[in-house]
Image (cartoon, rainbow, N blue to C red; front, top):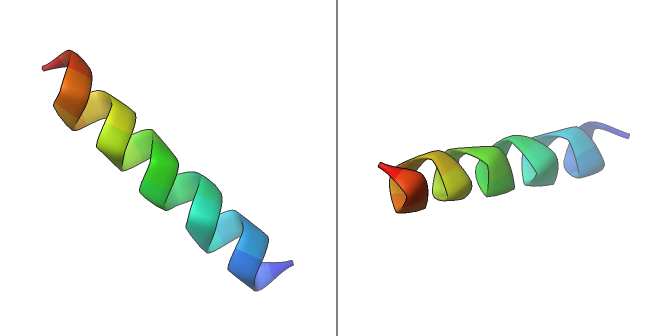
Length: 20
């Protein structure tokens, strides 16, 4: 679960940087 959550956070950060 922790790995999935970390991965989701990483993707969210990548998307945020990409959008910004």
